[in-house]
Amino acid sequence: MTPEPTPSQTVGPFFHDALLAEDQTRLVNPDHPSAIRVSGTVCDGAGEPVPDAMLEIWQADPEGRYAQPGDEFSGFGRCGTDAEGRFEFVTVKPGTVPSPDGRSQAPHIAVSVFARGLLKRLVTRIYFPDEEEANASDPVLVSVEDPDFRATLVARAGEVGYVFDVCLQGEKQIIFFDV
Amino acid sequence: MRGEHTMRQSGEITGYRRDHESQPPYLHPAYESTRLRAPDRPLVILPHTLSEVTGPAFGHGKVGPLDNDLTCQHDGEPLGERIIVTGRVLDGDGRPVRSSLIEVWQANAAGRYTHHADRHPAPLDPNFSGAGRCLTDGEGRYRFVTVKPGAYPWKNHDNAWRPAHIHFSLFGPAFATRLVTQMYFPGDPLFDQDSIFQSVSDPKAREQMISRFDLDTTEPEWALGYNFDIVLRGREATPMENHK
Image (tube, rainbow over all chains, first blue to last red; front, top):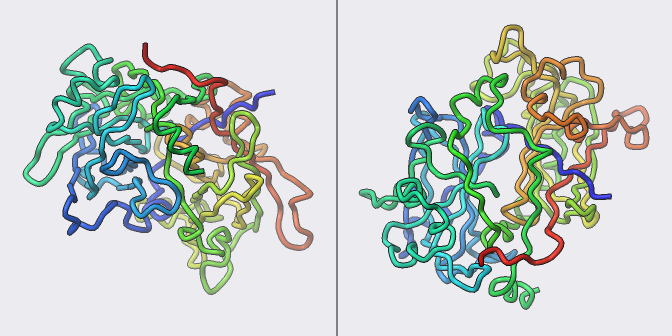
């Protein structure tokens, strides 16, 4: 008999001491020659910032390789949002990774969003604005027909690094995936 | 190991089974905070790729030997009913999930979190922080020593109280298997009015979140034992071609 999966429950508002005790926002040192900043704001359906969310990221290294145990670059990061709903990671840009159909996926970062009021995590992806060619043939991006909705998966170039805002609901809602 | 990984990086992908029936919805109006945070546009189905079937690995370097004992993180012992919480982490096919990180957090015996935003007028316990972690062993087993958390009020609706619970965060082998849940205690009188617990509509699935009192885990003259097995998603039976 196949056991049923345990249901998800919200992370609630009190996770910080357990999950964010160490700084996991820097996947590489900010002095790293290829370091990039990826930042943004989480907002709710009223457009208000969400100050008690947590984002986790999972990504390949610049060669498009996902970390194995013991690798120097872990590919994993975690950041709580501040009072203004902001988060920021310092990482390196991932390379292209294979797609099951033999094509390539454009460079992207997988993202999980947790918060009070989210009974299960939300999953999205961050793609890069300076990868137009790769993005145009990415199987996941091209599967979204509405170009405006598709564009919510692509970060924009900010003053320092990339900006990716996570609007949970409403007209500005970004794409979330059924994983 | 490396060879298998290389093959996985270039070849077919075995995805994870989707488990919507056992999961709560995003929008559950009885749980007030979902109303402005649940997405209202349909989710986009993401066929599993390397990005979803790989995931972070956390070694023993991240976990100290006493991190799973929440009763010995301070000079004195916390107040409350000492308990042992143990169980196995299994995948959807009943196989153990080994060397996998579990993080837990909870209120103290009086129903108060150390968190600065917790305003419940119940006493803090200087000997209890309420956060722990461990790695599962070779059989997927884990064990925490802690005190039984108290129920506490919240502002979801008039006279709303959360049943006693311990938060669990698990990774499993892949990005797709990430799970954050809550463990409840058997026979809690607050289940019926708790919108978070009741957000899971299937009664059998709700049972999966309730620990079981276990006399074999109970240690004489010392602590009650509770058993809580956690089941993560299982793999698809065969590799699937995601895109035609």
